Amino acid sequence: MTSEGADGDRWPTDLDAVFAGSITCQYASLTRAGLPVTVPTTPYPSGRTIDVSTGLTYPAKAERARRNPNVALLFADPIGASSEAYPVVLVQGHAAVRDADLQSNTDRYTRVSAQKLPHATKGQPKLLLKRMVFYYARIWIEVTPLRISWWPDRDLAGPPQQWHADAAGRPPVSDPPPTGRQPPAWLQAPADWREVAARALHALPLADLTVCDQDGFPLCLPVTAGELLGDDVRLTVGAGAPTFSPGPACLTVHGHDESFTTQENHTLIGEILIDDDAPRLRVERALADWSLTGSRTQIAVGFMAKGRRLRPRLKAEAARRGQRVPRVNLP
Image: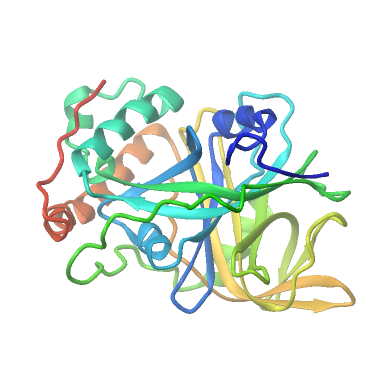
């Protein structure tokens, strides 16, 4: 079934529970070279957009979207979702980056993240949380859906239902880009990606593939990933998935607990090859990951260690936007 936007650019209300109840979705954006990069991100629906955020101190996800606003959100992670009926929903849309008011951004994030993920900070002293401005200082990415496809589950056994926004609508533009150079990566990619990939493919429950479709949008789909054989990962994609061609791709392998107090995410970059209609990813490298694993104490220590590396970037990134470092005002 295909439908146009019946209420301006408003998607079908049946999908609201998925967008609001999901702890994570896959957020896919494109590099300068057109390579898709996909990472799990917490979604926050807001009126006619579905918003995700990234830290002010690690703005790469936002800067990719500012350069190329074609992005995708894949809702295919049922772990901890508040809805029992959990379809797979692919949103392809237009991104607008919001960083003109960092204090407002930060206030919003502290409020909505506490509401959606209360266990993530449960029992943490407020004094400690206020010091975590390196994490709470935020850039928002507002995604205006242009087309949505959805299936009953991750099997993608049949063709999707589809919705398209009213073509007459004009998506909003991003705030002006900051001055100066974007900061370099702050985390090191794993030296031995094969060890990381082999363990993740064996241990983590979810895998999602992202390629580029013919219209220049990321196409992100749930897949079943096999073991790493040499440099290749064999993939199984449902018969109802859109067709795609060989080319640059990434495979995100991930999982978390139901309260989102732990998470592990790995993104493998490479090229899709298709043999006898069966795709495989030839992996070239793994990206650095932000994972929180181990005991509560281990997670806290690891998180603060990340903070020591990120804090020096705060003032510089705020200054690039002509603003002060925001404060953490807890709700």
